[in-house]
Image 1 (cartoon, helix red, strand yellow):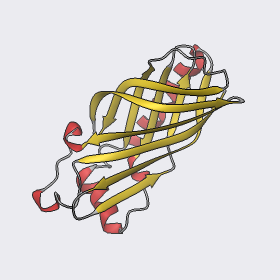
Image 2 (image 1 turned 30 degrees about the vertical axis):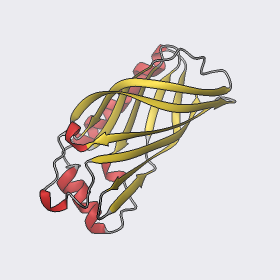
Image 3 (image 1 turned 90 degrees about the vertical axis):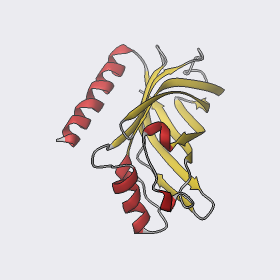
Length: 182
């Protein structure tokens, strides 16, 4: 049932974006996160980033399936991540939806530093964020890269005291991807 709701959500967003004007659609994208605590470094990556940018009104939507993260050092860490901290059966996706602040012609080849303002939703909790990205456009392909921090308590993710030296309260996130003009 939740998968069906997700498919309807993506279809609705896509239809709204396509009906409004020219769009970039995510061709390939990835998110890497890293927790650097005093006793442990934990990292994982997903190559399943999905997204769309409407270049006429500068609106965007990005989404990642929480269960798609791989590369944990042990299967135990992946299970803890999904079951105990992210509760991925209940909160299956993380999203960032909003607008690009700067007015740039994203059909024109070039390199840009852009800020995206929107709602970052993780673990069912939305936080308004401004995230800076490096963007390059060439021949109808837009490449983007961004790095930022996510604080677990901002998204109601609590850590038991027993693991506080193994999992950081501040998670480093790196996002990069490629979008094509449609």
